[in-house]
Length: 105
Image (spheres, rainbow, N blue to C red):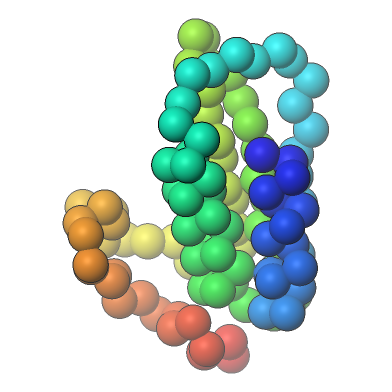
């Protein structure tokens, strides 16, 4: 995950956004499909950078609540409305927000 965040930091910097990896000091063993995990993480990081304003920081963290792993991507600025969250994982769907990918006022 640290490698993926580092790779995406270059593209985020072009958007005027910094990516920061939170430290994780625990041990974590999980089973996952590496291709699907990479695709999901790429999408999260790219969208967080794309829809953040210049100068914002996007933090990426790994947590271990109980026997699970949790990847947390936290960005500054307005979040999504509850009604938008329902549409988030529908294929080929874009959720309209206050800021477009290019609007950074």
